[in-house]
Image (tube, rainbow, N blue to C red; front, side, top):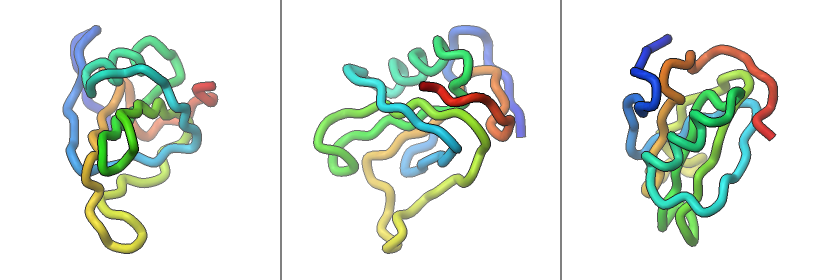
Length: 103
């Protein structure tokens, strides 16, 4: 499950998807999915990220994620769609590899 993007570029982004990994860290003051991806690329242990907008969060949030891949979720536990979620991988990194925590 690997894909490669050129250095400094974000790979594919998926709307309505949350990537669940072993560790996550809230990164404040991020204004767009591209900025969230760029922040993830700067953290060596960050493998993927999720950017939230309302209604998923009260304000825009960027979650940097690392460690073992757990799940690609497309709906909430109650079955509702993940509106306001956009997720992607750090360019050139493998989604399913294990890493140390991002914090």
